[in-house]
Image (cartoon, rainbow, N blue to C red; front, side, top):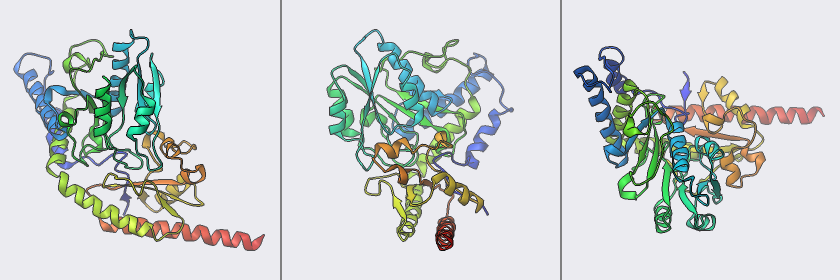
Length: 384
């Protein structure tokens, strides 16, 4: 039986989420922008989902803008904000070196300057690094809540406070954190937050940008007044409904799921530490309860991934959006991990449906691969 341990890439659609979506996939007809009762039914479903998503992250419903996913949310935030301040020629923004590529890549195509904030060897953004990177013209600071590769959770409170003290807005990509750890949009003082439904057992192709009205942002998509005028186009009602239900389920099971996946993660790390060739990245940092990224000396991560796949074990070598690249992870490079070790990286991300037997299956498969490789190396050396 196949074992799926790549939940940071995407999670399985929860059966209750699918059940909530089904009526809006054919039974309930209507455009949510129409004023008749059929349209109002669709609009009401969207607004209920908006409330559920807002509750998950400790925000208000009017702050939730639905998008097609985390990538669009990050693009909307960066491009929309930069366009709104482009007339200030000296304005710039600062982003951490370990952001997801859906933020780093659009940041390279902005009409304003972008500074990169370094991290320490554990993958943490420190207040000192922010202070050294920001200047009087910095208008937006973006630091993710938790890293998708290492799972490192950032201490955002001092960073947000520092940004606001210097009249700078603060954005966080919480795509990996939402549904795994508590979030407080309003309480934290963050000005914008990125979310993605398929990271918390919701459908693919839907996400949100939670944004405070004080943050200036221009819309990128024209042709309608949907989503508070920031995202034109008829809403994907089934997906939005699914996102709302997934958020509701995630909030209700936050503690229970957290304990379950942390127990499995701790069991995995205990077993991994028995291998002399394994290095767990960011082991000393606070991390998501479900995520372990490690390197195996003497292996290429993509090769190891394929060998595990042949044994019906699904893991990742890092972000799914950068899979297939031969270069070391930009996250590990920012953490100053040597290239030879960084290229051996494997990410295991545990889900609520995983069991201890899944962990045992992974360890058994990994042990067999390492031992086979060691034996092959010895045989080759003996034949030289």
